[in-house]
Length: 96
Image (tube, rainbow, N blue to C red):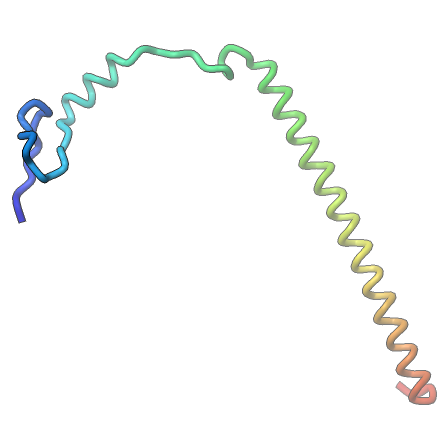
């Protein structure tokens, strides 16, 4: 297995079959030379706040609806089980 050396990008031979290993110094220099860009969130904090509030309200309403549906299904299942138990007790002549 060939030894991997950390070489600056200009010293890596182009005919090499090894993937280039980037020199840490060249990475740190390139990070400082990148232009600073502003983003949508930093320019419009009010809109982001509204999105967060609307998202939390949507999550709250959805969870309330899910809870109601689960409660209704649980109540229907218990009623069905009670009816089935009553039918079984009637078939057995009142003995459970």
